[in-house]
Amino acid sequence: MTEAICKKLYTSVLLFICLTTVVLKTNGQDNHLFTKQDTGTVPKEIEDPECLGINKETDHATLMPYASLKEALTAKRHASSFSMTLNGNWKFNWVDWPQKRPVNFYKTNYDVSNWKTIKVPSNWQIEGYGTPAYSNYNYIFEKDFPRVMSTPPLNFTTYQERNAVGSYRRNFTVPAGWDKRHVFVTFDGVDAGFFLWINGKKVGYSVNSRNAAEFDISQYLHTGENMIAVEVYRFTTGSYLEDQDMFKLSGIFRNVTLWSAPQEHIRDFYIKTTFDK
Image (tube, rainbow, N blue to C red):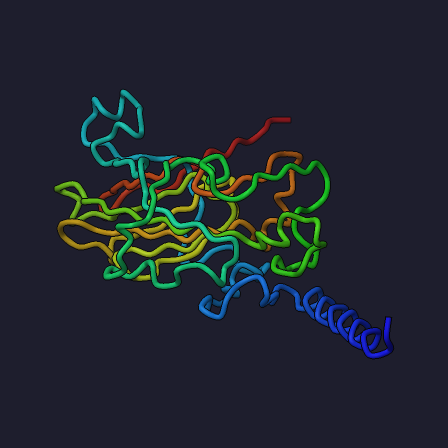
């Protein structure tokens, strides 16, 4: 091997090491894994441990208004005249990095007619999107609290699928008679965090994937057909507290319910007991 060839080989190896070092230390900005066309930024909320939600309703006792005494005595919440399920088929788009997501998909003029559909509720890994992962004690992303976009080892699935994002959309029509009432949407479970839009207007954000997330969407609705858009992130800073011994699956995996209450209604109640000696 000639000296010139050796120098070229050495230079190539050194360049590869330097580039690899840069890639492994960019804390999630691994630009070689997405293209110049991918311009979405990583929302700061998903790595903010103090952000548990935006514009969410505070927790309260389970409730459901009913249209009649007969409905109330039957006590089937989702059969109430003031309840409407949003379960079913939603338009869906999946990407392996937040930077690749369709950032404007929530706008009413954004065309999703060519998107595939996904069942709600479901986990998107079970529906053929991304890779399900099982872990009984360690994180499947790089442990770098509160960040979830830092570069993991090359053998981690999340090296390529850094933080998958599922974009969901569907249309719905508010039932007649709900126009002068409060209208809420309740997500019983979304793993792990999500942003919500109604008719192109941003409503809020939620983490805590195993508890219900509820939003008052009255002011965002209009007569006729409405559009709901949900952007779900596989990992948020809350994922550090949700590392149970289980398969790590993602998406809108529990019921989504639209429900209505009168302007004045009992929102919360509790029972306090006292003890004798």
